[in-house]
Each structure stands twice: as structure tokens, then as C-alpha cells.
Image 1 (cartoon, helix red, strand yellow):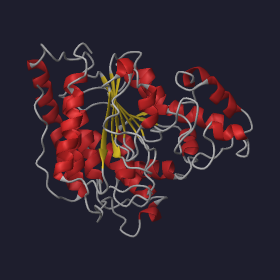
Image 2: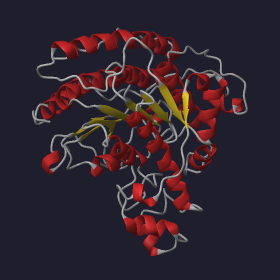
Image 3: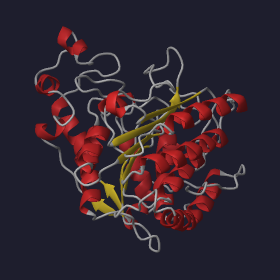
Length: 419
């Protein structure tokens, strides 16, 4: 059995905790590697493990067109530029391999999306047209100019990251312009017009037999789960808020997949006010069991930042420390990994969070003072990288978490041993 991954957790300023965690990544990786070796009879070491003695090669997906198109996402306009310029201002992009990307063609998008949906987006989409509603174009996904080009570029970013992992040119790929997990096969949903997460996973499947998808967004990753609900080759793990009336209204703990894919979907529904300690404890406990039972060869992690405290569409109390801790645990397994963006409707805080994640992946320490740059004014009044936790009460009682984990871990024990 893999050794439990534990950190001594204390309430520290976000960045000091983040870098303390970063220093532990190599140590944790070595521990996991030794445990994997000692348990080789029931947990085979995958061939794609990176060398734990050197820093992983980090690729950052970028093109000016990708930033421009991502800036058009409803409710998140200009966020892509905000993120990119903050990464640049801290000098982080000097330490990554830039992965160029271009739009993908319909053949790639038809890997998941229907031809009818893609063909409809090629025409002049009118919100007054009844067909627009049929394809999910309306309130939260209004028609956009040149929408077909828009989705082709957005998809191209995450597919480029996946291709870099398949080729082995990088160990970790990052695309904060991706993570649009709500889009369905034949409709847009929840600000998501294309499901780049699914398309990236399909690309990874060309090399890796088992892919783990992790969703940290406060909203359930319904589009990705639906795409692979019958599959044993892709395991979906989503930690999210689940209650009546909260979008998308799916992701109950009882939802574990269908048919041959039964027990290959794992939903971890949390209540309002989830704090760093709660989130990290649940994540570590569940992920350890998933890794034991599913044995993935590659990982895709959607890092939606709307679980941060004070997000306009969220009700959790997380700080970037929770995302950093999750990232560190994922990295400790040494698997090819793709990190995507997602939600995060307090744009400056999402930018802070994504920047902290990349810094930890790179092992770079950052000043808490935001460097002066073109988007500096967005970070007032504090102009600091830290984000304070919110004042919401954590409604996730110890008894609720105990029962939840009991259910989740029980479901995971049912994963077919031959997987």
C-alpha cells in the first residue's frame, strides 16, 4: 500500500506555506517511488516515470491568439492577459519551455463533439434562433463572433499540451487558458463552448493506457465525467460544491459511472465554507486510494480557481495554499501531468492562484509584492500575491467528512482489480 502522504499543516501566510510545500515535493516523490518499488507485485511502476533527481521539464502553452481568444470567454474577459502578464512579470516564463499552439481542425473536435454542433457553430449564430437554445447558446454561453475559430483555438491549447506529454518533450504541461469542463458533446454550457479537457485526454490516450482526470473547480466537472462515464480507461475525480440549485446540479457521491465504467467516476461533494484544511485532508485521502486502485499513467488536473475565498460565484474559503498542496501531492507521483485553468471569477485572485501554482511547479520563490507591470492596478488595494481565507463558516463538520470519506473510499474499493 502506498504510504500516506502527510504534511504538518499550520496556518501560515499563503506564499511561505506554498514554498515550504514546494521544498517537500522531491522528498515526497522519492518516498512514493520507493513505495511503488516495494509494492511492485500489486502496483506496477509505469514506464513514463520522470527522474525524481532532477527538476521536471515544464512546458507552458502559449500563443498571442490563444490569449486573445481566451480573453473573450464570457464572465472572464481579459483574465487570460491578466494571468500571462503576472507570470511574465515574476520572470516565471524564463524557466519554462514555451509550447506553441494553433487551432485544431474539426476532425480533432469530433473526437468528442457532434458534427451537428460543430457545423452549427460555423454559421451565423443568432441567439433568437430556436436552434441556438438547443445547442446551449444563450444566457451563460451567448453567441460569439467567429465562434468556430474561437473554439478551435481554445481546444488547440490543451491538445498542444497533451501532445508535448505524449512526445516526451516535457514532463509537465501547463495551459491556464484551458479547463472548460462543462461543455457537452452537442451543446455549450456554463461559459464552456468546447471541452478541451476531454480532447486533451483523448490525445493522451494515444500513449497512456490509463488517464486520471482531477477537477478542483468548485463546480462539478460534469462534461468530462459524461464523456467517459462508460470508460475504464479514464478515471474522473471531482471535488466540488453540491446542493440543489447550484450549477450544474450534478456530482452526487452516488454517481460513480455507468456500465463498464461503473466505479470509475468519483464525486466528492463538499458544503459551503470548505477551508484549506478540510479540502486538503479530503483530497489527500481520496487521491491516495485512487492511485492505488486505478494506477494511472498520466494525469490531467483542472485547477478552477472559483473555490478561492470571495469568488463571486463560489462559496468556499480556500486560499492558493490548498491548490499548491494538491499540486505538490500530484507531482509526488512523478507522472506526466497536464495542468489546466477553469473557473475563477475574481480575476485578480485567479491570476494570483495560477501564478503560485506555476511557481511551485518550477520550484521558484516569489516576492509577496506584485511586480509593477501593465495590469498592476488590478491587484489593489493590497498589491500582494497573498489571498486571505474568507470568513464563511465551514459547514463541513467532522462527522460529515467522516461519512463522506467512508462512502467514497467504499466506492473506490469496487474498482475492478484487473484495471
